[in-house]
Length: 594
Image (tube, rainbow, N blue to C red; front, side, top):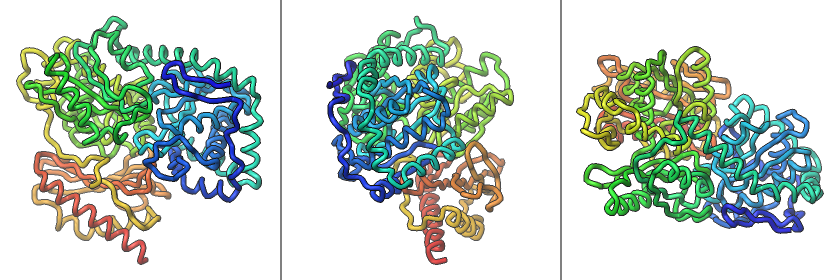
């Protein structure tokens, strides 16, 4: 029997058709697993049968289907509950259909009480997951179209690193055992057909319930009434993402926002997925054109494929559209929410961010009397840090990774462009907030609130985009601990001599999980040394004024390097980035030759 998704019209599964091909062997299965990146940020790999990361076909080889089944079994085993209730979903990548089928069948075979909502945004499935024992989400977030992977957790958030480190050995054991390929193949093809069809028959009802849960959760997160209004027009470039099958258009229109959408069908992927730089040109152009016809259109956004990230464009007072960098989006949310807390008399206000979030957030926080705390990269790490701060008595409503854009607003545990929009709307809905913000930024407020005046008033920083080619380095060594040690040795030898004259001192800050430690050497980092390293610079008044960043990507086989400096000196930024690249390259050569 064939089943279709009522929301999108897309085909889900034919229960009369086998999904395996009997081509995978134990050895080919192990080889396929070796190509997967397994981390707390998600398990990811190129999943297309061709192995091409830009392949937009839905074909998946059998090895990846069996690994999907093993991932589902590993998650349900780790939950440790008999017949757990789990919600399953996927983003809009074409490979999601077959991978969903493998996960669905494996879970049903294990006795899981499964609700399958198929194409859904990450914030949607996580908001709905509070009514379940856990969620399993098939997605590769911002990675290219041929990638896919898995995120899972419970109570609205992905598992932190400690949990993922316990689940990974379970997965490996299932793949590495003798006869694994045949065992997993039999599991997928022997699933009870009646139970499989029952889950698929219930799909549309489960999807409706998930959308309602998500809509309510967005309002609760924003502390907004169902009658609240969004007094502006919004253009959206869905780029075929899962958000095209989520609440965005009906939610925004129900709160009086005008909406103009392009690429608004799931899988209508028109350009690269990551919502950065030139990929925002489509929504920028659309906003400018629509604004000419209706000046109430002042904002636009583009989400990534799973819809947790969404970066923005805006119009200035002349109607010209501009792209907001990821760091600026986060800074805007930060200044609005921190100021909102201050005006309401909340005490010990804090914001939790990752290591490479621009020092702009530190300057903003200082101006309103809030504190900044930092974790390593990874959404789970900033969420864990924010929870820790609340347990210590801080008011910490916002956390996030400024280097990736978007914000996580409590009680949400995932980024969401809906939350950003609801925050921006406070400039109009909260009396005195706009004036308070402009005063703290040292600028004169306009007669009426405007987003562009707040953007213009923000202190100026130049930060390497985390997704620019300048931020990515392909190195040859595989021992990240040794690479860090050699990098530190080079840094100690030449930092004082090559540090710009406008900087007075430097220090190294190291990150592991939700912790930040100051100092050079292995004693300041975990034994596996997987976290980020930052060289932070200070001016003569001992204010932080810039940094160099180094980290190993959890989701791609690359090293990420970044520079952040206060001011507008692009030449200084580029000089520091060149120096950073040089030190990393020399450290890489040393490791290879040691």
